[in-house]
Image (cartoon, rainbow, N blue to C red; front, side, top):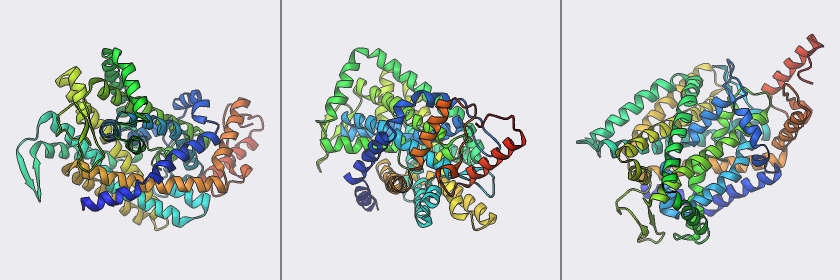
Length: 515
């Protein structure tokens, strides 16, 4: 099975996907005139202006849910893997894919807002690639295909990576405990304790719906991200003389990588996309749940989340590892010889181990424990985001089958994700990461190709950006969006919203907010 997984992973993550991700990001950056730079200040402003409603969450809560998916094992163990297999230059390519991917995140999240709808059972906003493929392209089969791929990826393939990282970090601090036989596996008792804690807390939160998920992530993600970055900055400043050398390693190695040019780009892009998820199609699900006045607003907020994930959190991890020298670089040849070996050969590259060792070298036992706690919060909130994405796509597939079918589908996806957390938490790290990469790759292929086709057919995101910037320049007090004005069809939520706004204006001729 592991051999089959590796073969499939190699096919999906061929150079074609790597350059498709980079190419799409560059294309959208040019077409939006680098919106990720021009409207950076507006992104910050929008974080704190949106408010939640009975049907939707606030822009900041949507950002938190999105960051819950982005800030996870990819930021701690993923960066370590990129360095361990691709060399320090892989970090540079993570930065590149984040900068370019911010424009892709804007596009996919704006599309999610345009074509969102209200859930027939909960009344909450639902949206994402499956919805905009059906409504913008008129290709329901493609929406169904993406929904199935998302359920497989986020419900089956990806949760195990996060759970595996949490349990490995927990065992690194607490030890393995006594060995117990679970089926064909020999598992330490402390790993079972960690798994039990994860499953209990996970069950309590996911049975509370998006509001409970948003509330939890709204506080947990910023708290842990800021704490993590602060400790990383302390390490950087304690090794301030090495900062130029670290930059030199990253930039210089990006083009003449010790592990090979292809390895640096391949691992940098792969782990960059795994971490920031730009173009993967996961972020749009949270973006669609937000209550905003204009579709472009949440697109801009989601573009900012890519910066938070990679430029801040991933860079913090990279600088910790590289400045303390707590890493190995494994060669690409079949013998797997180390090109650089600074720590014991047995240290697992696809794990939080490098990061824990870097933190421990400065903070001692506290550093090791802190990383374990950070891994728990980062990975746990990512599991919550994966559940939400899987639930949205189950809702998409069952929305015309009646309320009872929808309820059964959502219950089953809860059970599925908890089962996969248990499975992933008890299996080997390398195998689980390979399965996760298949999930990421499947969604990325379908989503990026789909949004490029939407651009060719209609260009709704560029139209939205121009409209938003025009209203912003005019200094309107309240933004508005009329789909019919721009020839956008199949946007029922915004059509109904605009109709009600016009009715309110007709009732009150003195009301000028929408002019």
